[in-house]
Image 1 (cartoon, rainbow, N blue to C red):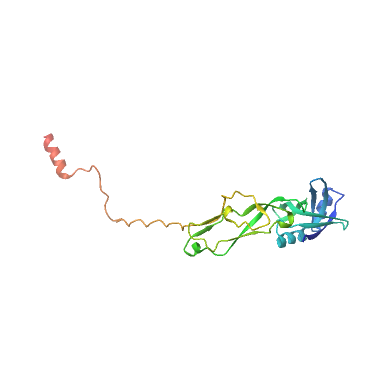
Image 2 (cartoon, rainbow, N blue to C red):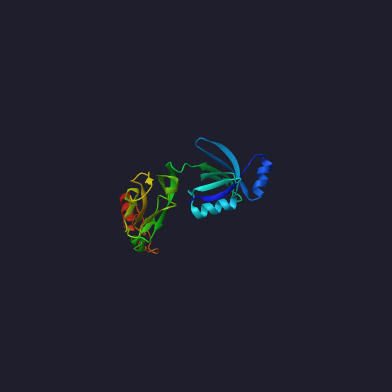
Length: 217
């Protein structure tokens, strides 16, 4: 079921009006999609953040525009003020609930790897999976159980179970998670006797010097 989010259509796009809009806790947004003319709206930033936090970034949002028009959308892109860490703009893409679409779905690791208990290091090079599905079949996340992984084991995309109502389009040879051996500690170097006098090369002995003097005489 889609989550409802209220929006107000924007007619005045002046910068001063947009600034006032943000001060009121709203953010300017654009709604667009295939065979649909883009429209400018404003949504409450707190409500949008709550929706994404609770439902995931691929949530289907029923955007209620002025109480007159309702469209099913997904949050496509958003901009954040790097100084204030606040949302300043959002783009919504109108989805066709009967057509498949390509999205990125986050990967969540579940369990504690057996190998990690033996000192192994769990590494996750892939945090999102490319998925194709109808909007209502897009999973919020893909859970990967790592509890049976030993040191040297890994889970590839091709190892994921097939019983699902979505298609993973990621390369099946891509590694999702692996358990690598613990890093070997460098061996301690043997202690050296710092009081020992260094060996001097090419130093002539006293006897050698005397022999040399006798030859010269």
